[in-house]
Image 1 (spheres, rainbow, N blue to C red):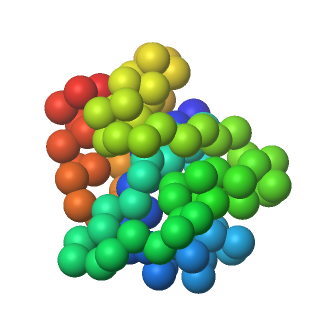
Image 2 (tube, rainbow, N blue to C red):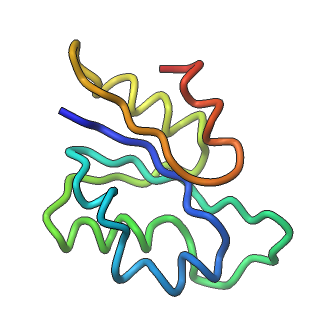
Length: 101
């Protein structure tokens, strides 16, 4: 199994890509998606990591939204099984998640 944690990069990327999520995420067995890493961008109303979760769910991928990287890492840790390969991808501070899993 390959469960994963993803932090979408930027509001515009998420708005433009959410309907067609990256193939790497669609291939993961159980994806936890956090809120967007904004960098220097201003929030776009209605654009959150939930858009990615909705698109993945439409593809039949088990997925869930958590608002923070810490919450996402906790969900990933709860759902991981011995022998799993954990995938952590995205922008911003999602890289620190491996310390929590």
